[in-house]
Image (cartoon, rainbow, N blue to C red; front, side):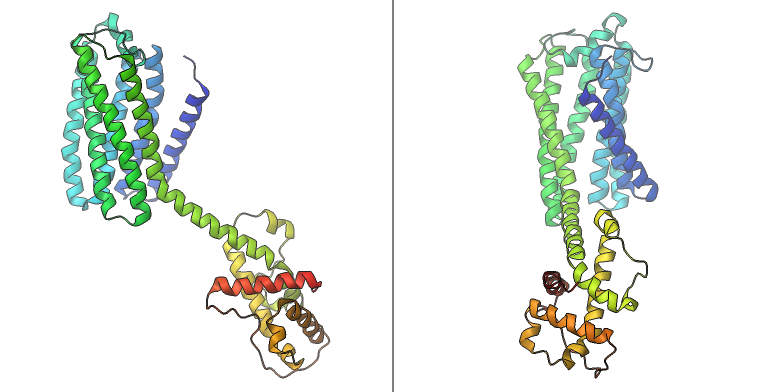
Length: 385
């Protein structure tokens, strides 16, 4: 049995996501929803290699192709059951969700029972053909009760589970916040596409049972709907997290950029007032450029240190008779700031009368940082650093 690059990437991604989810479950073992997602990922991940082996008609882990197909569908059914449980525990009270989950388990057990009996009843000489029938549209045995019962039971439960999950998704979306609601609506469309594909599979199974395999274009269309539905479902479920992460990344990038832009002003003030440094260990320029951790902490620290330094030097600016018009122009303020720091270094004594420097018109941190960045650019241009 050979594996394509897609199979390898799919396997790594699936099991990687499963390991990550198990880590999250270990951190919050009481969160039933995380257990449900872990069950979903485990079912999908474990089913995948068995499905590849069954389609290839190969022995995998010591089991024949039809047993591999049985295990694939069994894990897929467990994954679908976990998906339904996830939405129930997300949308309902815990006690009611547990009651519904027990009720859903009855259908799962019934489908697995039919599949188990049907798999055992398939004749030995038809087991390979029965396993590969899903990968050979229009071919394979027809009218065999055990084979038909196996696939009808499996696909019927999957159809029910994904249709039910789609309804729960729409119900849960009604009361969700806008970002989550948009993602859930996309996920609901994906589940609808998967359900339509499942309905086509069931009809195809019944048609084969009656002696007429479904035409290959019908099977190809249902596979397309299945793949499209999976993509939309995953995109919808990941949408809120991705949007949140992107927003956090934009804030991170803005803080990192401002942190570096404040360096000329901070350097000039820190050299004169090292006691204001909240971190007494000097920061290396290379570490500042390459470090990806602690950006927000360093950003806020640098803003505070710049403000503290400006407050300390402001009496010297006041004693120099700096006009308010000069304070409003970054280049002029940078030049005056250099003179004030020189006076401080020379030990001149001035009245302790602080004046506002580079204050923003808006009362917000972002506006304050923008003014400090303007002043820092001016310091760099005038050579004050």
